[in-house]
Amino acid sequence: MALRQTMSLGQNLVITPQLQQAIKLLQMSRLELESNVRTELEENPILEEAEILKEEDLKLTKEVAENIENREVEVAETNTQDPIKQDEFEWESYFEQNQKPPQSGMSGSEEIMNYENVITAHESLHEYLSWQVKMNGLTDFEEKAAEALISYIDDDGYLKTPLEQIAAEEKIPLEDLEDTISLIHEFDPPGVGARDLKECMIVQAKHLEEDTQDLVLLINNHLKDLEKKNFDAIAKALNKDIQEVVEMCKIIYSMEPKPGRAFSPQDTLYVSPDVYVYKVGDDYVVSLNEDGLPRLKISNFYKNMLKDGGSKKDHEYIQEKLKSAVWLIKSIHQRQRTIYKVSESIVKHQKEFFEKGAAFLKPMILRDIANDIGMHESTVSRVTTAKYMHTPQGIYELKYFFNSGISSSTGGDALASESVKLKIKDLVSKEDPKSPLSDQKLAQLLSKDGVQIARRTVAKYRELLKILPSSQRKKMF
Image (tube, rainbow, N blue to C red):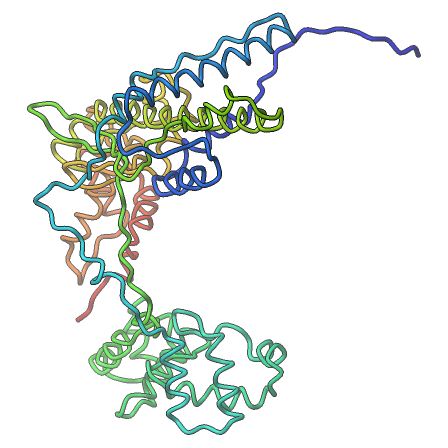
């Protein structure tokens, strides 16, 4: 077998570092982008931030970009005799977009949020339990065991780590932990330190001042019947009157299944929209939110350093940083233009939603928008990730507008799955609590309303809406 050299001609898709950067920036959220740009400003001395871009800033950045492109074309001609055609960048569009001072998306009539009312310190569950340990006059051994157990209690108030594992990890005798856990069960909030739901409810039952023997017996032996609200089976098993069982169940249903819930921080999450949609006359106008995003320009100081001479190493460093700066500016502008185009297409496809609300959302998939704006579906998917739109109907993630379609039994247009979910939620909110609607009944009611849907699809949507099954929604009192 002889070795031979052969030549072949082929095409390969090469993802350059610049293209990787553009893709990465495209799928970033607004906060991630701002953080990334701030980092680049710190690491790249060529980049500077300007409150308003001027004509000379645009001219300098455009000149540097053209020099870089010409150099790359020269290298390509030398190596392959096939010059690279650079994509034309709309520098004028970039200048127009950034020559205005940043404006907040909030109107002047809206109140500025008072952060003093937002940033507050909350006592944690662990801190509250540790305080109770110190107030109970425990011995040093008991206090050490109690502190160890408290450190393993989760945010819901449960101790899910086995005592044997805690004893091995903390080097504390198992007997001490078993004795101390009963002390923690007497702490506030009632039920804290329980290993499971049954123990949590039993601990809470023992905290009641009245006779709890029957309650403990009911919780121990009839938890499944309690969940299904099968009061007849419980009354028969306990040999008690149905009304007496109902009164006992009322007490159990009033218990807290997650004792630590009251100590969970209820932090408000604020969303900064990437796009604003306003109604002007009969049309809707899309406006990008540029507030907070740094306006970038090339430093004239380092550009002059190339002309004034210097070592080869300095020149290479500055050239590399210039190239990185130009690519970042281009990538950010391209990202904003892509978000604008996708948002504009969404508004065009979902005009009824902006007029009348979520009930009039139309079925729409990524391909619909991709075909409309002449981009790939993967690009649209990246654009709609972690991006938000402020609309007359509220603030929504861009992905919210993409829904599968549910056929209409009347032969009309298909309905968006989100609209069907709203119909299910509305039907459940109006049902009789003593006779809740089953999934099959919901499917029949939706069919009468022109929605052709299977029972299993109703069950899936109900679960997504976090609505309990009809057996668990039933209220006897």
